[in-house]
Length: 360
Image (cartoon, rainbow, N blue to C red; front, side, top):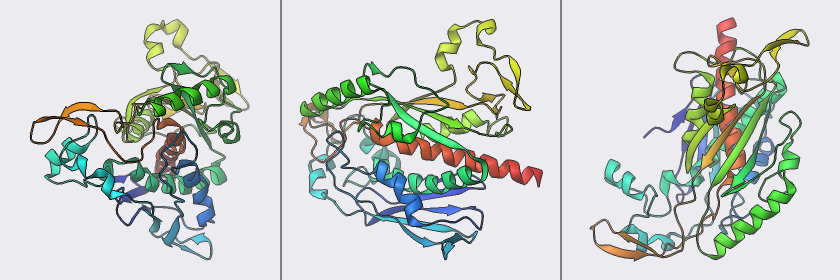
């Protein structure tokens, strides 16, 4: 199974949704970075379950422990071990689903591929796997912010058919995003989203949405054409997330309906450097960052596990009714916001180290 991401800044996650603990091993973090659990806990708290009525009622504080790689609050340049315990486990909720694969979940495909699977929870296919990503991403974010002033902010752009209005990509803050439990900075739309998710939850159903993200102050030159282009690695990172189904950057699919004369970003002088007048490219040209703000969107499907009765078939092929038990999010996108930010940080961190290595 592929559980590692990155080259110079390499992250390996471990753990299943109902095992003793989950976490990550981070290789390649530069020595000399001031780091403590509190630096990591901030993002884990934004990701954790049970934050509001909009999320799963599973109650997990998700406290992180740094097991290695840090001494006296400073990184040593060695492997950093991170661990978060699984405390609130209800494996009995999954007994019925041991014989009936959940529609659109990974139960069937994991069983076919490996001949065995974690029957309690979603195993490695669970959103709980993203804890390791978020913990590692928080380390990358601290380095990116301190050394290069890079800012990464994601938010919920849409839930179902509800879409937020335009936001200022250059000034939006995480504080503004977190001012609503649905993490949408458009107050009016946020309230409508909250009501929609509440209705869906009451009906024992689920709903999807879109998370948008901006990366500011990214230096020009990041990306490794032709196969490790910046947008290709961002797409890889985002589409590796549970429930993700779509990725677009800059103008995305809208750009396919434009003329070249409309879509091209003319160059202009910007504070001693060359910049662009518009940013349909989303901060990336030829697979390399151009110094403009990077922005992209990630589409997430509705969570597969729902309490609503579904007609399906068990592993034996016999038709049956499934009413899934367990504690699951009716909509994953509010909790996906810090996960998207973390994966963006991992991509930028790795490419930044590769660029610095090239320059010596």
